[in-house]
Structures are given as C-alpha cells and as structure tokens.
Image (cartoon, rainbow, N blue to C red; front, top):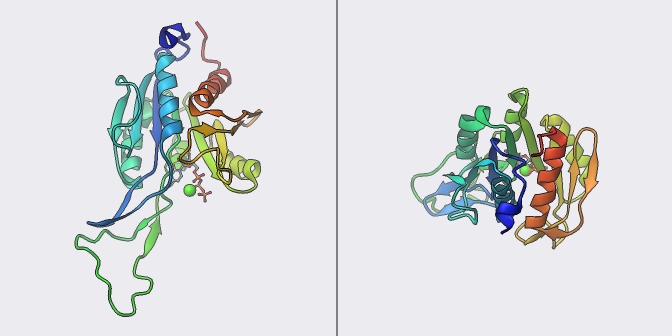
Length: 227
Ligand code: CTP
Ligand code: CA
C-alpha cells in the first residue's frame, strides 16, 4: 500500500494549501472565474497527508478530489480566501498557495440582476483584489515555510523569480501556461522549482508525481527531519 510505504517526513507538521480558481460574483446570475482545475493543489494535499501532515485545504471546488482526512474549508471569492487563510496562517508550519486567485473583482456586487441599458458598452467595473500570498509573506512567522506558484506565459524564470522576492517566498513553483500539457486544467505539469539559492527543473509528469517532487524539494529546503 502506497500510503503506509511512505516515510512520515511531515509527521506533526500543519500544512495549509489553497487550490483551484476563485469565483467573483457580479450579480445573482453572473460571476468571474478562471480555468484552474485545482488538481495540482489536490495532489499536493494528498501527498502531504501521505507524508503524515495535518492538512487543511482552502478551495472553491465542490467535493475536491482529496483524502477524507484533509480538512476542507470552502470559499468562493478572493476576499473569502483571504479571510480563511489569514485566520489560520499563524498556526501553520507550511503554506502552499496553488490557487489561481482573481486579480480583479467587481467594484460592487449587485443584488439585482444587472440589466442592459442604452450606452452601457462597458457596464462592468472591476477593482484589484488583495494579494493573499504577499500578505502572508509580509507577516510570516520565523519558522514558517511559504511556497507560491507563478503562472507565466513568457519569461517564465525571470517573472517567477520576481514573485519569489516581492512576496518573500521560500520557494516559487513556475508554470509555463503557454503550453497545452502543463498547468491549467490538465492532469500533467512541468514545473521549475526556484528557491533563493537553488533551481530545479522537473520533467513533464503527472500532477501526482509533480506533487511528490515538490514536497521532496520543500523537505530538503527546510531540513525537516527524515525518520
Ligand atoms: N496570489 C494571491 N493573491 C492574489 C493573486 C495571486 O495569493 N490576489 C498568489 C497565487 O496563489 C500564486 C501567486 O500569488 O501562488 C502568483 O500568482 P500569479 O497569478 O502567478 O501572480 P500575480 O502576483 O497575481 O501577478 P500576475 O498575475 O500579474 O502575473
Ligand atoms: Ca494573478
């Protein structure tokens, strides 16, 4: 059995993972979201559980494909994700932000369905959301490990490195979303793991296999004791 064969390298560790898209409601019938499936985050949650961690998953995805022992916190919007994450972050040893958080949300929610009107060519107005990961980086407890993703369609390494620095991360996982077989909505991924001192290109793998290598990278990075 794969689960019991695993060394419990994360025994006693509290892990928080965010996964999937956020859903920004515009009015009772409309919303703004993105193509993230959540699969990379679910694979990371399942692998952490198999390694012995106490795992919390914050996601908008209904019935996410994770082990029943994962604590699932349901959210919809970026604002709800921010509250759910910041309420729990101080108690966490490791946080991985795999979620595709909306960068923009409607300026205000309309309780009534928005009707078309003459001259309303650009009727919807949006505002920037809070950067959850950056907020976590700025308030990071000393021993906490903070890992983010970078979804890039060009200059992947350079742009990912900027996110590592500006968000004060211990590791950034760079995804080239210009490819059809990696990242958004598919079962495979090919990522680059970047820390302030190391860089590791993983080959094209299933998201389950990718999750295994990401966790081994995090465990190495933090020198978490191996049983
Ligand atoms: N992220 C976040 N809160 C936001 C936006 C992004 O926590 N409001 C996190 C994502 O979960 C991810 C990381 O920041 O771990 C990078 O997200 P990405 O969309 O690649 O980068 P952004 O910083 O949003 O910059 P841009 O979209 O302009 O490239
Ligand atoms: Ca973004």
